[in-house]
Amino acid sequence: MSSILREWRGVIRREHRDEYVNYIKGTGLDDYRATPGNRGAAIAVRDLDDKRTEVITLSWWDSLESIRAFAGDDIELARYYPLDDKYLLERPRTVQHYECHGDAAPGRG
Image 1 (tube, rainbow, N blue to C red):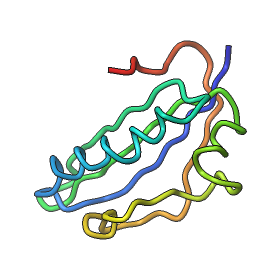
Image 2: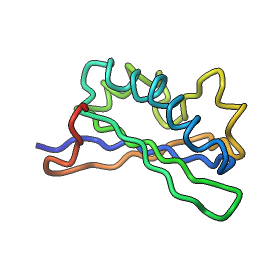
Image 3: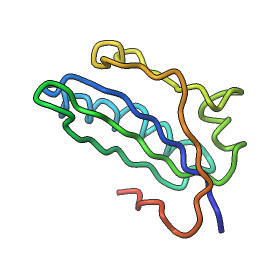
Image 4: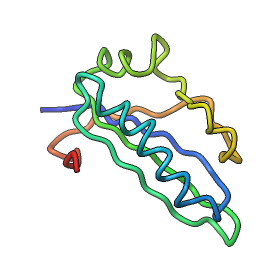
């Protein structure tokens, strides 16, 4: 069965990495997982250099309609939270969606 993968990327100051990861776990990832049709969510980070870290959130969904329940009518727009501006050096306007085949979604742990 296919699903849809939603990908968001941002860049933060490296010294805020752990703090921002915890913030995203309690906002975005919790909101993804609480939305009907969500199959799982994960966050990944990588240091770009000694000052910047890239943050990626991935979420797996049953359908575009389930993404719309999370993101609103324009599912291509990124959704942000109140403290994101405190951390983000770059704030992309859009996200990417991919058709996903197989059982790629992580567990809910």
